[in-house]
Image 1 (cartoon, rainbow, N blue to C red):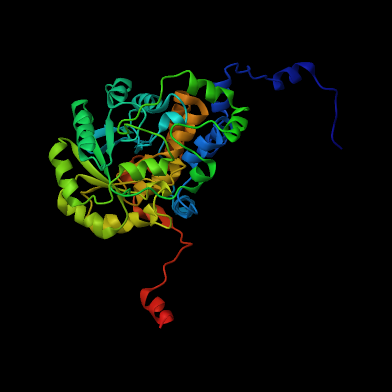
Image 2: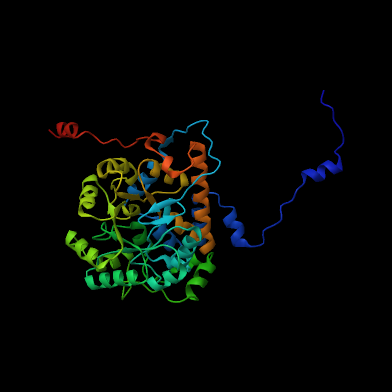
Amino acid sequence: MVQRQLPNPAELLELMKFKKPELDGRKRRLDAALTIDDLRTIAKRRTPKAAFDYTDGAAEGELSLSRARQAFQDVEFHPGILKPAPDVDTTVEILGGPSALPFGIAPTGFTRLMQTEGEVAGAGAAAAAGIPFTLSTLGTTSIEGVKAANPHGRNWFQLYVMRDREISYELARRAAAAGFDTLQFTVDTPVAGARLRDKRNGFSIPPQLTLGTIVNAIPRPWWWFDFLTTPKLEFASLSSTGGTVGELLDAAMDPTISYDDLAVIRDIWPGRIVIKGVQNVEDSVRLRDAGVDGIVLSNHGGRQLDRAPIPFHLLPQVRRAVGDDFTVMIDTGIMNGADIVASVALGADFTLIGRAYLYGLMAGGRQGVDRTIAILRSEIERTMRLLGVASLAELEPAHVTQLTRLVPVARDAAEAVVR
């Protein structure tokens, strides 16, 4: 029989340890976020539907985005045993400079629409973490404003070639003059993808007040208060606004961009240049041979061509084709530090986060971006320790198996069916 006794008050006091309440509401909700998905949930609750869906959504059926995320989930790690890694080194040299972590912040457009601190929050958080920050051509903070927010860190600039070429050229010159060290020349946006959530929401730049937006705003007064009491949105490249994002992009972008434009941009830009939006092996090799400094395997976060190739699946093929000495970066679908570790193991020199950063921004401004970086850092370090590697250089393809759900049909078999 179990021996029972009356509870000892002194022992009860030892068990009853009350946590000091956190009075700062923002810090309380961010501390409760343990994953990027948690930040997404907070962001959705705090942000008007149209602005949240602009960030969260992708093109058409959103297959490119869902497949990219699924590809990272379909990873099997192969840890080594009895390989202690009490301390891990997450630093990396990328494009001629250091980064404290194997990821940087990707370029995002219209960022202050998500949360009014916008690119200033992202650049400041990147500076504090020692990672690069990328400003978009369609950013809502000026080149000089980002430089002021990140005066001593690494700033990169993402460039679209506009119909009015001189707009693009002048932006590149301004970024170079401000000390931005790398240019991401984006090539996957000759026209805008069909972002159906935006069309269904009637999302426009600037936001238009309708009965639906007013109803949606009622439980989110803080977003509207911030939006209406802070400086008017200004864009690096758009002289006029009014219309959906797709309409604005179609009016600004030029579907005739070519290697001739790349040659002009290379003459203008004095620093490193990488091509963003590469989606096959052949283009990767051609760009390497053309002498660019690197590429970003990307389908634009699934926001352009739906059913586009999955960058993470493409990565091993590209690495084999271009060799070890050419810089290959990757974005699209990264929601966990383990995704970043898997990418590095399969040959990526660096990764970029877009939505993960914006979820943190919408969840809590600058502090939310800091929380995004802290979550990813913790996941990277823990995954490395569990794999038994002490540095990024120790990661190799043997650590990862890409499990496949979408297996291509062999060409000869497909042709036989057609016949």
